[in-house]
Amino acid sequence: VKILAIESSCDDTGAAVIVDGKVLSNRIANQKVHEEYGGVVPELASRAHQENIVPVVDVALQMAGVKKEELSAIAFTQSPGLIGSLLVGSCFAKSMAMALNIPLIGVHHMQAHVLANFIDDPKPDFPFICLTVSGGHTQIVLCESPLKMRVIGETLDDAAGEAFDKSAKLLGLPYPGGPLIDKYAKEGNPLRFKFPEPRIPELNFSFSGLKTSILYFLQENQQKDPEFIQNNLADICASIQHRIISILLNKLVKATEETGVRDVAIAGGVSANSGLRAALEEYGKKHHWRTFIPKFEYCTDNAGMIAITAYYKYLAGDFVSLDAVPTARAAF
Ligand code: ATP
Ligand code: FE
Image 1 (cartoon, rainbow, N blue to C red):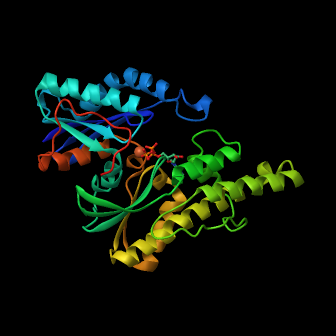
Image 2 (spheres, rainbow, N blue to C red):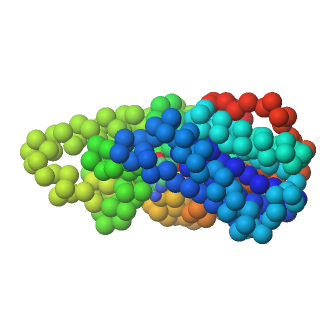
């Protein structure tokens, strides 16, 4: 089974080739155009996808050593995401499927983030719990089989990635600031500044209060010392990161206690965070979990995760027709 998978939900254009369940190539074209705007500009994202998609697909096929005539199916991200971006990937996928007369597979981007944990070995056993932390979502997902998963907790406001990016913005760091907070936090003291942990019922999250408390904290300290941020950047970043991680992991502990599940994975862009990766290992030891973290390149948006999901869908005979429409929002 040879599948070409295309990811275009946000601002990165990805293509990957999977052969019999093994990802042989995983290409991504990052869009630089958004940096100067401090966030993703949807119209510019769609245009950049149009420019990038043909070369990215070409290289992915070449690197995998697979000719397009050999493909068994074409997969694409169907939802959720920016509608203009999704349309570019879906139209391209449909055209190729039609030209080659092969089936089309529509993939849910958040399900794919979870299944990134199945690209390499060791893989989690079912049932397992995945904490998906990305730019637009924060979810605790209970997975019963590759295609049967259920959200048992999620954020009521900002996503974890947004909490990182918005905190970074308050610190005057460029977008996306998550990786920069990670970088500066490495040199800092995570216990120097205390930010509040919100009390949110059940397995849900909230990050908007944290953002407000950081804003007031910075304003107050900058009144006393205009250079406060510059002089304390590492400690501030480490303290913010420490709080985001403790909010996430305390809910994960609660989820494992309530379900009795012991295989615990993380996924999504924020799972690239070195502090979160280390904390998962630490909590795992303490609570006797088997822990799983995707390889770095499969954490942030990528087509490899779309490819592995498509592989399971292919085996299940789960195809979509050529009139399948992408949607900006969708449950799974
Ligand atoms: P979604 O998957 O919810 O649609 P998305 O696809 O835009 O959102 P991802 O690409 O999965 O999100 O993740 C991007 C987010 O991950 C950004 O908010 C970014 O700041 C954050 N991120 C990436 N690397 C790190 C890191 N090392 N530390 C903290 N945050 C990070
Ligand atoms: Fe994503």
